[in-house]
Amino acid sequence: MEIFAGSVAQSDQVFSEFTEVLDSVMGDAEAPGESCSAYNPYLVFTCLPASIRHQVLQLALTYMCGVAQLSTGAYFLRRDFFPSIVSLVKTPEMEQYTFEAILLLAILANYHKSDAAKLNPYLKRIRESSDGEFMRKLCWASNFALHTSIKAYQEISDDSVAPTLASSLGSVITRFRPDRALSFTTPNIPRDKFKDQPTEASVVLLPIYEFLLPNPLFPSVLMEDLVSLADNNISHDIPLPCTIISFASYLCTHASSTASPRSIAYASLSLNILLAFVENNMVMEFITQTNIPVIRLCRQRLPVLQPPPRPTQPPICSVLDCCVLEVSSYTNCIWICYRIVWFLQNRRLRLYYDWTDIWNSIIGLLNFLASKLDTLHTTGGVELLASETIRFLDLALCTSEAYLPSPRAMHELIYELVRSSSVLRKQESLLKSLALPCPSNVRSSFGNDPIEGTLAHVVKVTEFYEEKVTQAGAGIDIGNAKDVMKIIAAEIEANGLHGARELPETTPMQVFRDSFHTVYLTAWFMHSSRSQDVLDFARFACADVLALMP
Image (cartoon, rainbow, N blue to C red):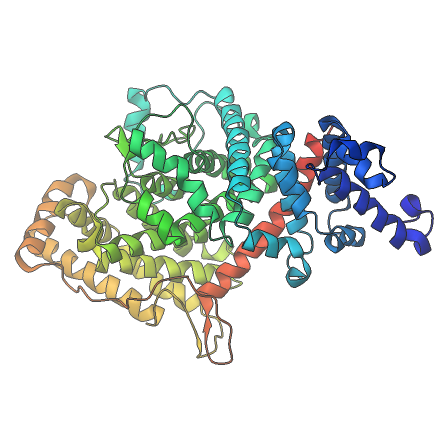
């Protein structure tokens, strides 16, 4: 304060005038030109060229990222910059600076977000905004920046080449490994090649996230170009939702291989954006039922992600692929998969997708948790992950007839459970060893049943079909997969799915409640996890924005 204001006593006046000048220069673009000769010093600023207004915007952005969460940033909360930022973005000669303007808004919204949310006016402004034109400019600038970030990955390793025989064979073999979810490697590319990725421009994910979650209009604006693409099936520009999904695949692919906190923070935020997608019913109605040209996903590690069999498919298939790729934010991936399956079965929508990859990844995760328990931190997060994964598997099993595309897909699900029955049995001892003191009024929002009962149901169904296979004299190894599948198929076709049961028709993960009577553990943990993810990302966001400044 002494450096800027000369003394602490004068700081309030100096910083108040500082923010007032910045606000006046950036905003009020529609003031008449003759005001340049007026005596009011702030009206003079309305006649300054776009380059000066741009420099002032950069000054505000540099200042807020420089002070981070220090107390002097609070002066930007006393004065509402939202109208000036919107005015700047919507001014034709200033729209080229939209990228920096929306970054400033996101940085302001994240100032002391966790402990002073009610005091931050920008959170309310974002939540209540109904300016569709401004949101379209935000989408346009974000799409351009994320395209640049994707190209940076592709320039390091061109992943558009058709798969070779060796990579295809490797993928087929690896998909049958129980630890598939943890077996990815980057083929023939030194790990440090990606250490500086993603590019700093990727920080634009933050304003997307800030608008997507609380603002009811923004998801509709976000989907406009995707709807146009589906209607025309031809587009020179890839819509922002497709770009986000594509970029998320690159982030998830390399987050674990580089193991840098920055790359993991970016991957976590991208998954939170995908989670916001699948939690929105309007978005889900479209991305689960509308075919568009296949979204290009990252194919820069083994096993290589196989291209879809058809040139068009619903975007939700690519979201599921991102969950298969991700190996660091397991809980977010489980929540995304759970919400997708719940929505599909609730709407009775059959999704044509290679679900085997999902089942292998889920069972591989459970096997990892059971075999590596001694090295895992048992602070409650592992217990929640194990519980929610089991609940997801139970949902997928109980509702399989409603969302799987064919009887064969259901047979494959049962086969994967039978093949991995030993992994499922290990979960009982895992849950006992992870058991933490828990109030009786705490439960998961995935369902009301105790997790032990849910696991028992999955194991009971698995053992039923395992016994049928054993009685028929077929081994339960990969070599006899064809015979095992025939036995399972014959049993289901004759008697239906054994142990099928109805689950509560409650929407998962939609309500966060913390009252005297009921606490939804999953919703609470999700709220806490999201807040922490954004808080972690905000630290890197400030550094990346400063790196972009001249």
